Amino acid sequence: MAEISIAPEILGHIGALPITNTLWLSLAGSTMLIIIALVTRRSLREVPKGGQVMMEAVIGGAYSFVQSVTQNEKITKRYFPYVMTVFLFFLTCNMFAFIPVLPVITLSVHGHAIPIFRLPTSDYNLILAVTGLSFLVVQISSFTFKGLGGYLHQFFNFSSPINFFVGILELIGELARVLSLSARLFGNMFAEEVLAVVITLLAPVFAPVPFHILGFAVSIIQPVVFSLLVLIFVKLALTEQHH
Image (cartoon, rainbow, N blue to C red; front, side):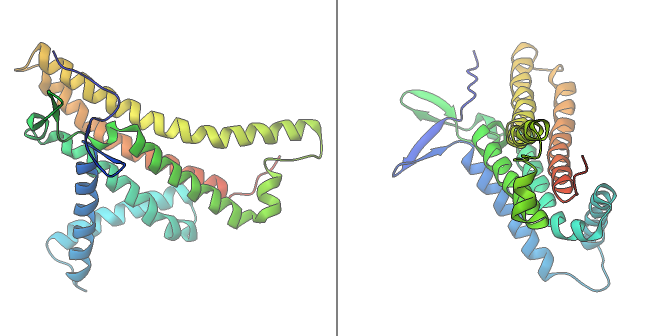
């Protein structure tokens, strides 16, 4: 019987820092993206060829998509690198789920065999950390654009009881975005992982194939949705409010 745990398994400790089985793939995904970025930067040519053509097409298409959302070249140039980095990080982490050998590599800890590698996006701590960082990006953008007075005024408006109540709701809504963003991505990815395990146990030969195809689609769509929502929140933060 498969044991399914929401929390990542702890493999050991470095001092007081717990080392979980989601940490390795998180580091691997980050390292891969950094290496690809450095190699690509050093091999860029004025006349593109081969892989550079494909990469420029992908990046150009993503940039055009972001531009279609923001409708503002300045916003696109400033926030495209962050939004694209978040998307590529989550996408890379999700792709590790389709390496068949990883789930079977286990380590015996206190007499229990636990997997050494686990999908990083099934760890709510990781998703919450990235969501919190995105929340800070949105709030700093809003503060920079509106100034201290305008930033506080949207949450604490004392011109009337109704406006004050609306401002409090706005503050609650901003904080709720952290929970909604993180829970959406975590819920979908963890559910996909659990479903794949259950289906594989019930019918290990042919039944898992359609669910793996569905899982592959979810692994691409969810990072797109997450990044798109962050971009929309940034755009709203840089837009004047009209009551």
